[in-house]
Length: 167
Image: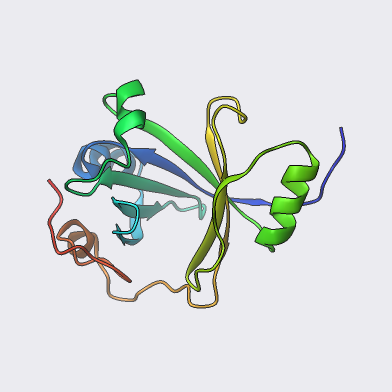
């Protein structure tokens, strides 16, 4: 097996459900995840909340924004939700893309020109049924102090909130 040396680090496991509130009793209350960050991706059509655990690991809980079709095919396969993707941080996304292609993968959904978050994906068809996100935090990436879970669920996430509360 050839090592391409991405130096990838698992950042989080993302779980999607029709409502984030349905995921919170397990991942927040029972398992002890504490609110870390969150907001809306209005460009794509979802809301996300990240929970952090005592060892520093994170889960991301996701739901569709009202009117979004982003999760339609995912929910056809998984009506109640489930693991949506794994996110690995890399030092250089162009280098990760080149290495993935050299290894025979076909990255999709390249989003490289954002100052906040840059990403590409390995499709579940190529990644044994799991969507794999390769990402890099951009120079403008930040965690917003004072932001709360209630803010995000009310549609007031940072850097973007849709203004529409979660169901």
